[in-house]
Image 1 (cartoon, rainbow, N blue to C red):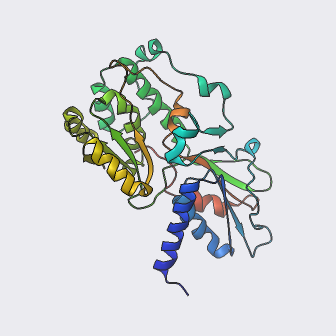
Image 2: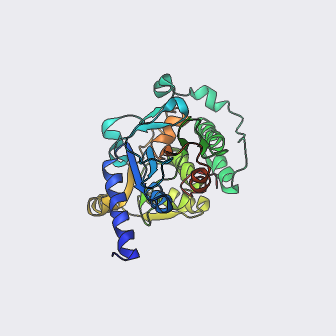
Image 3: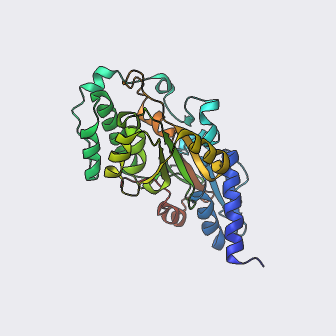
Length: 312
């Protein structure tokens, strides 16, 4: 019989395989007394859009045998390539259901510049400081839109589906909760606070703040000085481009995502996608469901998972 540490190591190995290959769906089956713990371990350490919990010993909770999702019953899902290869295959991952026109829609600078700057909810004090330090009014307005989107999306998170013969909960999630398995954000020599502020807020204004690492070019003294001002659990590494590339080549498999932040053109950010599309580039979403109808035990157990995104 394998020890607990051996079981944990095997589950982490499976989780990393699922992250690396990113299938759409995972079916988890075990005796009902064991399947919730097993399912939560895999749910929390991966970022699949569909996870289905079945049982091997309960007639009204049959085994999970398919990768099916019913968006018409709020079993939201999507099609995500492996996170680190997102930019190779798509501009944005497809989320189902979602508004098709939103994928090619962007805010006009004039609208964002006229934004009042008010956030529709409670945020940490450093968020207000960051907004004040952004120099471009359009970027400031965009960050407010991002924050308002996150506040609205996490007000009730997870949300419950309304299927007739199985039970689903869905919503925005944190990246995989594997120790030292983070999103790595590269900030080059010419990148400014305006360039990285929207990404920074996705993590540091939410409970995903411990799951990101910023690699800042050693010559970018302005950001090196100012970023710690906003960091609650800020992991900051100062290195040149060659050192960063060597580290990714050597240790890239131990990062969930690796993103090089583009430097704005002529000092002005020009692209402002819809918040839902922007957020999907960095944070996972999807649903987890039980094969049992009206499974209140499932909702209570998985609804408490720390994997669901929350405002900090």
